[in-house]
Image (cartoon, rainbow, N blue to C red; front, side, top):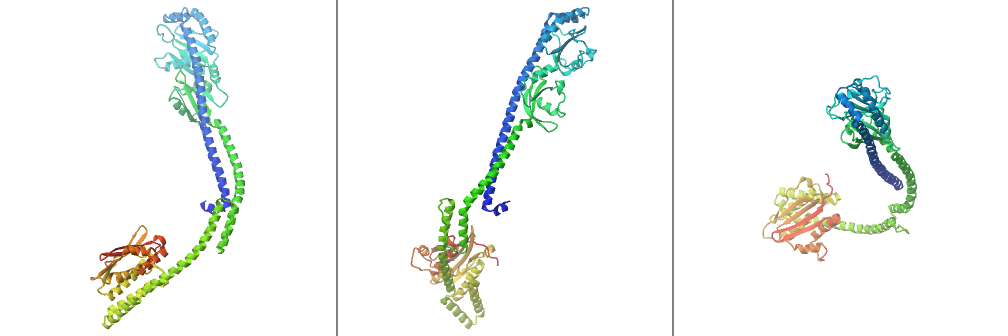
Length: 588
């Protein structure tokens, strides 16, 4: 991908950049807006659903509380109390009389609470109920209600039974039953007041508080893990997780994944009259977020339109921008053909014009540099010639050949052979096949042959030391004949007048990418400060042509990175250190 982008023209890159910028900006903005609105809608829907549930639960609790109050009023009435006294005394003779007396309280209770479908007081002397309601063939002990009573804990006062078909009366309506033990001065075993509440009435009560939307409500029993209303018995098959969630607290909200992998937002609140009954509100998350989905499609449409506009605008902009660049490119093509007199002209003062002016200045500098290079090359050639002239110094050759002659006269053939070989190697290494750059190995070998010859010419003048050098440094490229002039300078100016033998030491070191070559002697020394001023051009009087020549060659080839460091303590130590950057190793 990177290679493809690099091969594109500038115009094509501008197109791609505009399109990418447009797509990224709209995508980031659209994603942020989409996520923000999704979260906000989810939060608001959860809050609204919880508020609706709280209101519905309050109304539902109030209705159940009114029913309980109505039943309590019935039980505190005189007809009911007389009936309980007969039950206590097991007096069944007054059954029909008491049944007749109970009709008025029954009618009053059902008139006050129209949600009550039927009522029955089960006692050991008989069942009491409104006579207009026809009893079914089921005996109380065979009914679903009696089974619930037998399963209930021992200490109970009120039982709520979820939606079921009424087995006590022949109408068989779907009802929710309230079972209450009688309010009497003493406990009467086997006596229960059963109030059947119309299930459809309570369902309408719940649905009446729902606004238009996707929110749905149902009531479930946490103790039995079933719906309270029989019409809501078809809960999801994997509703175990649902009941585990609503069993955690009295109210809350969570996300629920149905068996068909549809996400739902669920709110719940426990009813005050029966904490086991929980009012649940649920709504489809996908339907709730449908506006967000429409918004995403709108964003994609806007993105497509903006991409087209970006292509058109980038094409126009690239034409405007590339016109001066094309002009500058044509000028560069002419420069490639060595037409250095061309110049860029523009009436604008923008960045491209600044580049054009820099181009004009660069052409001027190139012309100046060409002249400087010519002068520099001439200086290099002169320095090389001086180096070669120093190598074949007549005085050195005279002394060397004279020594060879006398040694041959004295028949010291081995010394003669050695000196001839050293002289030959000295010239061969110095010539270096006409190349200016040699290796550190060959440069050290060159100066070693020179020292060997001079030591034979002046047998008692000096001794020399060349410590072993790290093999990794031996192939580093260096200028040829940069050590021999320093050694010659030590012999001629430092050791000639010493009353004792001198010592010349050549050391090599490397650190932080720099190579350091040091020539040290214990000769008469020099004025290091004055020589450094001379080398830097501050002193016009030249007193050391060898040092000047080496310093000039270092500067020509390595520039400011190279340096020559001088130290001198007469009679103790005089050292010249050449510092140069380590360049690529030459593989021999």
